[in-house]
Amino acid sequence: GESVGLHLPTLSVQEGDNSIINCAYSNSASDYFIWYKQESGKGPQFIIDIRSNMDKRQGQRVTVLLNKTVKHLSLQIAATQPGDSAVYFCAENSGAGSYQLTFGKGTKLSVIP
Amino acid sequence: NAGVMQNPRHLVRRRGQEARLRCSPMKGHSHVYWYRQLPEEGLKFMVYLQKENIIDESGMPKERFSAEFPKEGPSILRIQQVVRGDSAAYFCASSMARGNQPQHFGDGTRLSIL
Image 1 (cartoon, rainbow over the protein chains, first blue to last red):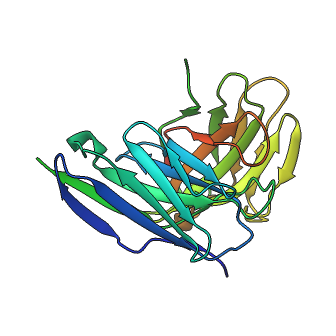
Image 2: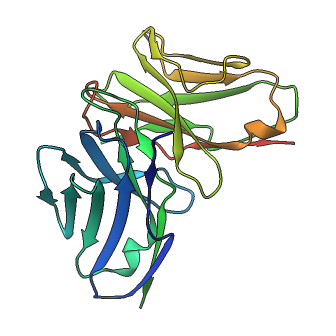
Protein backbone atom coordinates (compact mmCIF):
# COMPACT_ATOMS: atom_id res chain seq x y z
CA GLY A 1 0.00 0.00 0.00
CA GLU A 2 1.03 3.59 -0.30
CA SER A 3 2.76 5.08 2.68
CA VAL A 4 4.84 7.88 4.02
CA GLY A 5 8.41 7.04 4.95
CA LEU A 6 11.51 8.72 6.26
CA HIS A 7 15.03 8.36 4.88
CA LEU A 8 16.91 8.54 8.18
CA PRO A 9 15.73 6.96 11.41
CA THR A 10 18.19 8.92 13.59
CA LEU A 11 19.96 12.24 13.27
CA SER A 12 22.54 13.78 15.60
CA VAL A 13 23.46 17.44 15.25
CA GLN A 14 25.59 19.88 17.16
CA GLU A 15 23.78 22.62 19.02
CA GLY A 16 23.63 25.71 16.85
CA ASP A 17 23.87 23.80 13.58
CA ASN A 18 21.00 23.48 11.13
CA SER A 19 19.04 20.21 10.95
CA ILE A 20 17.39 18.70 7.91
CA ILE A 21 14.89 15.90 8.28
CA ASN A 22 13.69 14.20 5.12
CA CYS A 23 10.52 12.37 4.19
CA ALA A 24 9.44 10.48 1.08
CA TYR A 25 5.80 9.97 0.25
CA SER A 26 4.29 7.75 -2.37
CA ASN A 27 0.66 8.89 -2.65
CA SER A 28 0.64 11.32 -5.56
CA ALA A 29 -2.92 12.34 -4.63
CA SER A 30 -1.82 13.77 -1.27
CA ASP A 31 -2.23 17.51 -1.21
CA TYR A 32 -1.60 18.42 2.41
CA PHE A 33 1.40 17.67 4.59
CA ILE A 34 2.20 18.30 8.24
CA TRP A 35 5.32 18.01 10.34
CA TYR A 36 4.91 17.01 13.96
CA LYS A 37 7.36 16.89 16.86
CA GLN A 38 6.85 14.26 19.54
CA GLU A 39 8.70 14.34 22.84
CA SER A 40 8.87 11.32 25.08
CA GLY A 41 5.58 10.64 26.82
CA LYS A 42 3.73 13.37 24.95
CA GLY A 43 1.48 13.69 21.95
CA PRO A 44 2.54 14.94 18.52
CA GLN A 45 2.95 18.69 18.50
CA PHE A 46 2.09 20.57 15.31
CA ILE A 47 5.12 22.34 13.83
CA ILE A 48 4.22 23.45 10.33
CA ASP A 49 2.06 22.44 7.39
CA ILE A 50 2.15 22.92 3.65
CA ARG A 51 -0.32 22.49 0.84
CA SER A 52 0.60 20.98 -2.49
CA ASN A 53 0.19 24.28 -4.32
CA MET A 54 3.27 25.54 -2.48
CA ASP A 55 6.87 24.36 -2.52
CA LYS A 56 8.16 26.22 0.51
CA ARG A 57 6.79 27.55 3.75
CA GLN A 58 8.59 29.18 6.63
CA GLY A 59 7.83 29.42 10.30
CA GLN A 60 9.82 30.41 13.31
CA ARG A 61 13.22 28.71 12.85
CA VAL A 62 11.61 26.05 10.65
CA THR A 63 11.18 25.71 6.90
CA VAL A 64 9.30 23.00 5.06
CA LEU A 65 10.16 22.22 1.45
CA LEU A 66 7.94 20.19 -0.83
CA ASN A 67 9.15 18.65 -4.08
CA LYS A 68 6.17 17.09 -5.80
CA THR A 69 8.23 15.88 -8.74
CA VAL A 70 10.14 13.41 -6.60
CA LYS A 71 7.53 13.21 -3.82
CA HIS A 72 9.87 14.50 -1.18
CA LEU A 73 9.30 16.62 1.90
CA SER A 74 11.90 18.09 4.21
CA LEU A 75 11.94 19.97 7.48
CA GLN A 76 14.78 22.37 8.13
CA ILE A 77 15.42 23.59 11.65
CA ALA A 78 17.74 26.57 11.97
CA ALA A 79 20.14 26.94 14.89
CA THR A 80 19.11 23.66 16.48
CA GLN A 81 18.69 23.80 20.24
CA PRO A 82 18.66 21.04 22.89
CA GLY A 83 14.90 21.54 23.21
CA ASP A 84 14.54 20.42 19.61
CA SER A 85 15.54 16.87 20.57
CA ALA A 86 12.51 14.71 19.81
CA VAL A 87 11.07 12.37 17.21
CA TYR A 88 9.81 14.13 14.11
CA PHE A 89 7.02 12.75 11.96
CA CYS A 90 5.79 13.82 8.59
CA ALA A 91 2.15 13.13 7.85
CA GLU A 92 0.08 13.39 4.70
CA ASN A 93 -3.58 13.33 3.87
CA SER A 94 -4.86 11.04 1.14
CA GLY A 95 -6.08 13.60 -1.33
CA ALA A 96 -8.31 16.61 -1.66
CA GLY A 97 -10.30 17.21 1.47
CA SER A 98 -9.21 13.98 3.08
CA TYR A 99 -9.02 14.03 6.86
CA GLN A 100 -7.08 10.82 7.49
CA LEU A 101 -3.45 11.49 8.21
CA THR A 102 -0.89 8.85 7.27
CA PHE A 103 2.23 9.05 9.41
CA GLY A 104 5.74 7.91 8.70
CA LYS A 105 7.73 6.02 11.31
CA GLY A 106 9.64 9.07 12.53
CA THR A 107 13.17 10.42 12.75
CA LYS A 108 14.81 10.82 16.13
CA LEU A 109 16.73 14.08 16.38
CA SER A 110 19.41 14.28 19.06
CA VAL A 111 21.07 17.62 19.72
CA ILE A 112 24.60 17.49 21.10
CA PRO A 113 25.29 20.39 23.51
CA ASN B 1 -5.82 28.13 26.26
CA ALA B 2 -6.56 24.48 26.90
CA GLY B 3 -5.46 22.06 24.26
CA VAL B 4 -6.84 18.61 23.62
CA MET B 5 -7.35 16.89 26.96
CA GLN B 6 -7.18 13.15 27.31
CA ASN B 7 -7.71 11.01 30.37
CA PRO B 8 -6.62 8.90 31.93
CA ARG B 9 -2.96 9.31 30.96
CA HIS B 10 -2.24 5.74 31.94
CA LEU B 11 -4.67 2.86 32.14
CA VAL B 12 -3.98 -0.68 33.23
CA ARG B 13 -6.48 -3.41 32.53
CA ARG B 14 -6.53 -7.19 32.79
CA ARG B 15 -7.43 -9.28 29.80
CA GLY B 16 -11.17 -9.41 29.33
CA GLN B 17 -11.90 -6.08 31.03
CA GLU B 18 -13.18 -2.94 29.38
CA ALA B 19 -11.15 0.19 28.71
CA ARG B 20 -12.69 3.63 28.32
CA LEU B 21 -10.58 6.47 26.99
CA ARG B 22 -11.84 10.04 27.05
CA CYS B 23 -11.01 13.03 24.92
CA SER B 24 -12.11 16.63 25.14
CA PRO B 25 -11.26 18.57 21.97
CA MET B 26 -9.81 22.04 21.84
CA LYS B 27 -12.32 24.83 22.38
CA GLY B 28 -14.15 25.57 19.17
CA HIS B 29 -13.23 22.25 17.55
CA SER B 30 -16.01 19.90 16.57
CA HIS B 31 -13.98 17.31 14.65
CA VAL B 32 -12.33 14.53 16.61
CA TYR B 33 -9.95 11.82 15.44
CA TRP B 34 -8.53 8.81 17.27
CA TYR B 35 -5.16 7.28 16.41
CA ARG B 36 -3.19 4.38 17.83
CA GLN B 37 0.57 4.30 18.20
CA LEU B 38 2.69 1.22 18.80
CA PRO B 39 6.23 1.64 20.22
CA GLU B 40 8.65 3.29 17.76
CA GLU B 41 6.02 3.57 15.08
CA GLY B 42 3.95 6.34 13.60
CA LEU B 43 0.33 6.89 14.44
CA LYS B 44 -2.39 4.88 12.68
CA PHE B 45 -5.81 6.38 12.03
CA MET B 46 -8.73 4.68 13.73
CA VAL B 47 -11.87 6.79 13.60
CA TYR B 48 -13.17 10.26 12.78
CA LEU B 49 -16.20 11.76 14.51
CA GLN B 50 -18.18 14.93 14.56
CA LYS B 51 -20.72 15.75 17.23
CA GLU B 52 -23.11 12.78 17.51
CA ASN B 53 -21.85 11.26 14.26
CA ILE B 54 -19.24 8.71 13.27
CA ILE B 55 -17.95 9.85 9.91
CA ASP B 56 -15.29 7.23 9.22
CA GLU B 57 -14.38 4.21 11.34
CA SER B 58 -12.42 2.40 8.66
CA GLY B 59 -9.27 2.19 10.78
CA MET B 60 -10.96 0.72 13.82
CA PRO B 61 -11.25 -3.04 14.39
CA LYS B 62 -14.81 -4.13 13.77
CA GLU B 63 -15.08 -6.10 16.96
CA ARG B 64 -14.64 -4.90 20.54
CA PHE B 65 -13.88 -1.28 19.58
CA SER B 66 -16.40 1.54 19.49
CA ALA B 67 -16.30 5.32 19.61
CA GLU B 68 -18.75 8.07 20.29
CA PHE B 69 -18.82 11.85 20.47
CA PRO B 70 -22.05 12.86 22.20
CA LYS B 71 -23.69 16.25 21.99
CA GLU B 72 -22.51 17.01 25.49
CA GLY B 73 -19.28 15.73 26.99
CA PRO B 74 -16.06 14.21 25.73
CA SER B 75 -15.48 11.74 22.96
CA ILE B 76 -15.11 8.17 24.24
CA LEU B 77 -13.09 5.34 22.74
CA ARG B 78 -14.27 2.07 24.23
CA ILE B 79 -12.46 -1.25 24.02
CA GLN B 80 -14.33 -4.26 25.30
CA GLN B 81 -12.77 -7.55 26.40
CA VAL B 82 -9.25 -6.21 26.03
CA VAL B 83 -6.41 -8.44 24.86
CA ARG B 84 -2.63 -8.03 25.16
CA GLY B 85 -2.44 -6.75 21.58
CA ASP B 86 -4.50 -3.73 22.56
CA SER B 87 -1.56 -2.37 24.54
CA ALA B 88 -0.58 0.89 22.86
CA ALA B 89 -0.76 4.64 23.15
CA TYR B 90 -4.07 6.04 21.99
CA PHE B 91 -4.11 9.63 20.82
CA CYS B 92 -6.98 11.93 20.17
CA ALA B 93 -6.77 14.93 17.87
CA SER B 94 -9.19 17.69 17.01
CA SER B 95 -9.58 20.25 14.27
CA MET B 96 -11.79 23.21 13.49
CA ALA B 97 -12.92 21.89 10.16
CA ARG B 98 -12.71 18.82 8.01
CA GLY B 99 -9.87 18.26 5.57
CA ASN B 100 -6.59 20.11 5.01
CA GLN B 101 -6.61 21.44 8.55
CA PRO B 102 -4.00 20.98 11.25
CA GLN B 103 -5.00 18.27 13.68
CA HIS B 104 -3.95 19.08 17.22
CA PHE B 105 -3.17 16.16 19.49
CA GLY B 106 -3.56 15.43 23.15
CA ASP B 107 -0.87 13.69 25.20
CA GLY B 108 -2.53 10.32 24.82
CA THR B 109 -3.62 7.44 27.01
CA ARG B 110 -1.11 4.66 27.49
CA LEU B 111 -3.04 1.43 27.78
CA SER B 112 -1.34 -1.58 29.31
CA ILE B 113 -2.97 -4.99 29.38
CA LEU B 114 -1.84 -7.45 32.01
